[in-house]
Amino acid sequence: MRACIVYFSRAGENYLDGEVKSLESGNTKVLAEMIRKFSGLPTFELEPLESYPVDYEEATQKAQRERMRDQSVPYKKTAICLRDFEGIILGYPNWWGSFPQIIKTFLLEADMAGKWIYPFCTHEGSGFGSSLSELQQLCPTATIKDGFTVRGFRVCKAEPAVKNWLTAIEQWEDLSENTSNR
Ligand SMILES: Cc1cc2nc3c(=O)[nH]c(=O)nc-3n(C[C@H](O)[C@H](O)[C@H](O)COP(=O)(O)O)c2cc1C
Image (cartoon, rainbow, N blue to C red):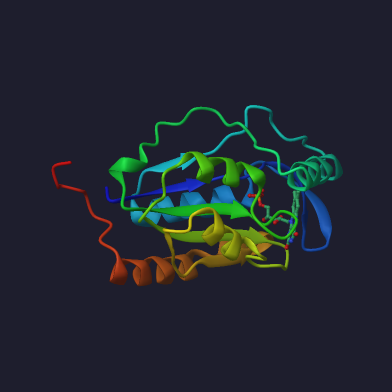
């Protein structure tokens, strides 16, 4: 394939539509699975070596500390070989106004030079926040394309919008099997 999906998501307690609820699968994971189902693209989940607390308050505090200290967040090895891909569809929840630090850790290690990124994000009202400009700063020679956001509690109803977004992506990118010899 010419592209792959890379995402991070956290299961456990989360603040959804005004109340704390426990999620078996994180919202971004649900969205990533939907994108995988409609696109057939290889999909990679970034899983931190040290998992986040299930408790919502504890998780938000840990995430805030990581962001304030600009910490890297080591993640379990994945089989991603970015050289094989022309671009990625990159998913994350909005944490403290941007992407979680694990996304930054991934992007600093990945060579995104000259590749494209279609971002998608779940949130509780802030949309992408400052994540798009931060993506561009981290990957100055990558092209940040039109992204997709959805409120976390509406993720299960996002299918039609996801299909439209993928159709739009396919007008710009060839996502089919990569047959070039590299
Ligand atoms: C640590 C943390 C920080 C968050 N910060 C924001 C925020 O700044 N703006 C926002 O709209 N939502 C924020 N949220 C809500 C999440 O973006 C939202 O619930 C998202 O759908 C969670 O995705 P996930 O289940 O894939 O982790 C935050 C949630 C957590 C756990």
